[in-house]
Structure formats: C-alpha cells, structure tokens
Image (cartoon, helix red, strand yellow):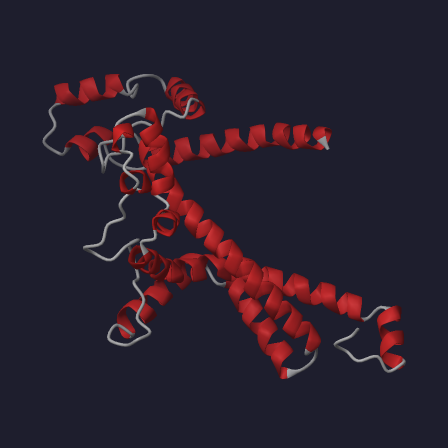
Length: 271
C-alpha cells in the first residue's frame, strides 16, 4: 500500500509540473500589458518599469517561470487584483463554503444515486428502469455550469413569485448576518488572536455555526441558499452512482442462489 502511494505521488510530480507550465504559458499568451491592465491605461512608463521590476516581469521568460513555480510551491499566490488582498487569505475564507457545498453534494449524490439504482434494478426492463437510466445518462453528459445556470434561471427568475422560488446566488439573504459562535458565547477576549482566526474558520461554516448557536433563522436561510448549487454539483456523481448500483445489484440478483431461492417460492422482499 505504501509503495502504491509513493508511486502515485511520484507520477503526480510531472503532472503538476505540466499544469504549472500550461497555466504560465496561457497567462503569457493573453494579449495586453499586465501593468496597464492592473494600474490602468494612464500608468506612465516609469511606473510600469517599477511594476515590472517588482514582479520580475523584466527578467527572462525562464527566470519568470522559476519564480512563478517557487511562489506556487511556497503557497505565495500574490495579491488579488480585485480585492487587493493576499489570494491565500481569500482562499482560506472561501474554503468553508467549498466544504459545505462538497459535503452537501456528496450526501445528496449518495442517497439519491443509491436509491435510484436500487429502484431501477428492482424494476428491470420496465419504463421506470428505462426512464431512470435515461435521466442518469443525461445527468452524466450535462455540464455542471450549464445546469447551474438553468436552475438559477428557472427557480430564481421564472418561479420568482411562487412558493418554489429559490435564491440563485449568495449564502444568506440580504440583511441577515451570521454571528460567530465564539462571540455568541462571550469569547470576545479571543478576538484578534491566533485562536480567533482558527475559530473564525469554523464560524464561516454558516450551517454549522447556526446549528451550534441555535439560530434557526440563519440555519434555514443558509440551507435554502445551498439547494440549487448542491443539486447542480450532485447531478454527475448521482448519475454515476445510480448506474453502478444498478449494474451491481442486477449482477447479484442474477446469481444462482438468488434464482434458486425465487424458484423455491421465497418472496422477493425476503430474498
């Protein structure tokens, strides 16, 4: 097992190098001046020279790539042009949202996929089976971004004034805010410390934060905002799980001991 893991890690090294090279080359192929794009068209030649020197853009292309790779390895992703803050800091802040969506999508995919696979296998060669597999094939072939746009358009716009309306974006309704649990519990003394940053990471999980503080309004609102993205993210894995479950169950149901039990009159639910 350890040997297998080491082999996979070694194989991933050239793959990661290739990804770094491709992203670097693509960034260099984008037309335009990076200095003018960030500082504006009115940036002077002197300002652009200082800008290029600061970020190493005045160095040879291979040196730029080495500097780029070094910073990536050290998790130094620079500052965001849009937010003027370190990218690594923004990633840490957004990571709780990623966890919420990933876990939500995984749970829905497993529950729905296994259920659909079992139903399809038990109703083999019936309209239910055919319909389920057609939906599974459509789900596998449907791009997630397109499905997300269609769900947002349907539930966020077309059904806007109905009971089926769902928020197409955001994490909470405007006007609502999630108060960190350590502030609710009176731990303000930790504010601004290293422990506070650690606690803020968990507090940014709005569903978890609302659950442990008993704020059910925030809890329901956060769940409501997660429905559409979770459905979009779970569609492909749900379809794959449904097909795998169906084929595995059909294989088991076709074995000799199952057919023998049915031939002896044992009820299907007991089998």
